[in-house]
Length: 247
Image (cartoon, rainbow, N blue to C red):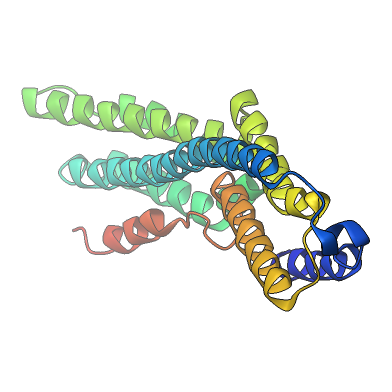
């Protein structure tokens, strides 16, 4: 994307820069400079809004995953002293759910889909925790704390799924504004008449490369489960490793 933008810009400049108007500079430089400054300011504003919003959402996605995984670890700890059949069943469901998220659901989020099996496992986990003994105050406290943590895990999962499968009209509008603005930043100097001088060509080619990378980076941020800078399920992998260390 970046290389293509730079090559196309160079070719267009070499062709357009040979026109008589470009060589003679027969245009109102002050007026065109003012228009260019306004376009530049608008592009920066749109890009700033889009980048900040997408960056915040990507960071929030990682926080949701960390909170969800932490809740699962807490459940694993909390049932340590529960009767063995119930404890083993709860722990097995916690492990199975965590493994399902890492091995299957995370890849599905890249396709904007949710894993129904993971959802069923979380429902089964909540039901199993609800069946824990509650004869003593200690048992009741363990069950209530575990239920609170499974509710937290479910809430964080819903937020994670929503970010992967949902869409925002505002972000779509800002994305198109960023793309059109980047194109305008390169097209405007070509339209007003840049000469084919090597310095002019290199400066605009360099600008095109930077803008193309900026747009690519903005698009990457808008897809937290896809691309080179996507959020990885490291929190869940760490949780699986911690399960094996819990007595």
